[in-house]
Length: 179
Image (cartoon, rainbow, N blue to C red):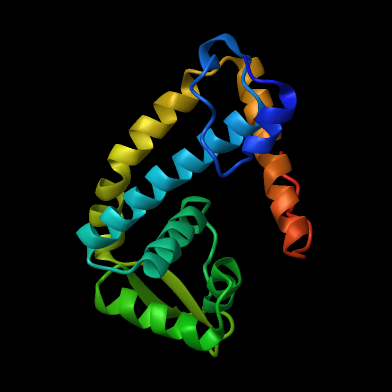
């Protein structure tokens, strides 16, 4: 069996040792390796969805964000989209132009401030995009639903602390508190 020092030396970017692994209790390194493996698979799924929808990954991220906003019955502005994606207003305009040409979104004048633009779902946003995500949504939701309430609490707390750790590391402001 490995010593604790040997396990710590393996580090996050190295696979756990096969020797005696079945007898050991999972470590933080194991959790981070599992999280990294999940992210790699999820990233591959995003690439395949981008190809299926014939859009790039930035546009896919924009659609994901916009569908979430629309699902909450909130308005979506180009400025909000730029902030959510962390891109410039010029880049946001290009994203919006591409998504509008592809039929995923429509621009509409704001009902009160006629200078402002509101982004709303296009015909393809509700049909193609949502059907493309059905496979992911079903599998991921089933995995989350299989957790006990204690596991759900632990995983949620862990992921939020990871989110905060990354935000702190890159100097982003605190993330908004969630219910």
